[in-house]
Image (cartoon, rainbow, N blue to C red; front, side, top):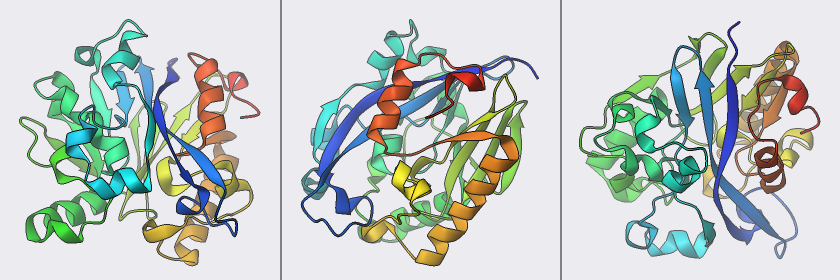
Amino acid sequence: MKTQRFKILYLGRSEHEKYKLVRTDDLTESIKSPRFAVLIQHPDKGNILIDTGDSRNMKEDHPANIDKLYPTKEFIPLDRALWSEDMRVDDIDQIIITHLHYDHVGGLQEFIGKKASKNVIVPEPEARAVFFQTIADPSNLGHAYIPKLFAGLDGVTYSPVKDMFEYAEGITLFVQDAHTAGVIGVILRLEGGGSAIFTSDTLYTRDSFYKAMPPAGELFNSEDEFQNQLNIIKKIKDDTDGVVFFGHDFDQAKELETRGWISDISQIRGL
């Protein structure tokens, strides 16, 4: 396998009650919820970006209820995070949006007119449902969808995907039936024989995986849905000797940020 590497681009955080993210009996406990993108450098595909964080124009783009539910305490624009790697948005060759919630797709506006906007990968089941609802009755989309962040963006073309398939040598995409109608997970095979598994918001935190703690709130459908997807990810972890990364685990995200560029599984064992 040709060598690829990845690193996390930390894009800020929200802070709110923990029960809004994962199930808990303590209604006073708070949690820091990170926003991040994953930058992959692949020998054939070039610079791949998984997710784009929130919009730099969040004051204008967010409905008021979003900021009440999930107050933003820190925001780092995507272009600034790329600058820290001596890169610009022009250098990104491919974008993968795990799902169309505002904190994952908000930075897509930065790519209007750029090469990466011509083939943005999204989960097909979610795209079908959300784009139909955007036309039919956007008021029923749910609070985490903000149509102006993904619908009608000039020149942005979407490539919907489904099921599990090898996207490139060493990179497998799999569409998960959890959190939304479809969420893209990513398996990156690394030197040393293991893999990094990015679940996005199917699993919010370490507790979601190791304690089987279900998500909470309106973005949770059923115990069976959560448990089924958890079992699938556990099997992927076992089959690929993988390390699992969660959608909103602050401590894990910040620790991964300190590790810099990752190309060997030994660099992330224990995370």
